[in-house]
Length: 202
Image (cartoon, rainbow, N blue to C red; front, side):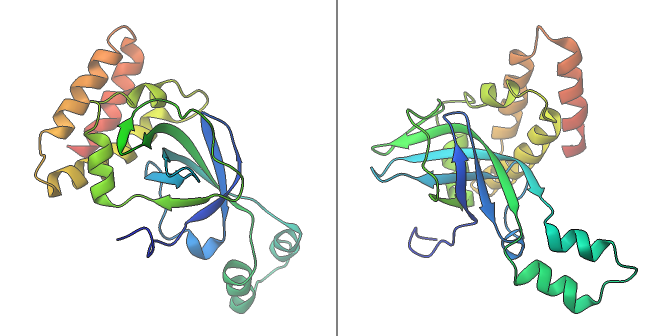
């Protein structure tokens, strides 16, 4: 799918070099998922890549009024979800960027700007990103605090494994597990938590 035919899954609300938050409508929530790779294209042609770490659906005044009722007609629920601009926020962890056709697993030099469009990466982009520069972007995930890192890893690795296998790269997942073991070798409790979570993919 070309850049011209891709539909944004949201627009940025706020950002810094490490993470950014995009807003979207509920009807656009069918596509993004925890651990998915997404990107923002900057004006200079460079791109910032990130992983979705959380999707939060906030309340508003009408929702609070509706839930206080004894029963909610289905047409009210449908109108609230699909016609109104509900405050849905997608949290993204920056894990790399692309400049002049080259990918880096480093934090971007500058954050994207508010109202920049957030796009979901397709399988080809996911394979290219995960196979560029080894597994360097794992360090950004493992530095997360107050986040379910194990669940994020499982969600991301499941998607990346499937995409790599479809592209004829079945060894990618084994290499990813070995890299995680190396990175967490001095933190045995956390390593066991990660390995126990990854066991669900076997």
